[in-house]
Length: 220
Image (cartoon, rainbow, N blue to C red):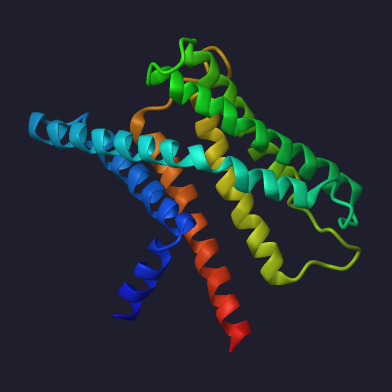
């Protein structure tokens, strides 16, 4: 019951629900991608799982239509990173916030084009939003470094390692979704996209659970 209560509590928050939808979507893509290459019966199940994955991905895209305000407030609060001691981390973080801020309107335009609300080429806007996401991931990886002259605590090192691994998995998928001809763009089979996304999602869930556990201990 404790686990069920924890799950229900997590699903009451937007971020918790998004993590679950993301994880389920990529898991469906992983299993579906494996099954579609097998017998007819399994291929049919695989195709259905891929359809579920596509719907869950679309759900997350629609929900992100409302993320601009929160992102703007975070970017405004961080500003030029005056509280950061490391100037490199400050610059990288500011650029990362800018990439994230630009990502959302580009994705919204692509979504509106697919929905035939706007008469523009959605492929170009999807490519631009994916490129901004990839840039943000690269900058996120670059920002994971010790920010003081003292040796980083073990917990911080583990947290930064998990973040780097998660971003690398997402970055591999981001490159895959770019227009063909750039590195490995368009070359991943569905199961590999699902595997990388599942790894990234589970690492994100792990990070969130550990942060929640630390917050609970601090409160007690």
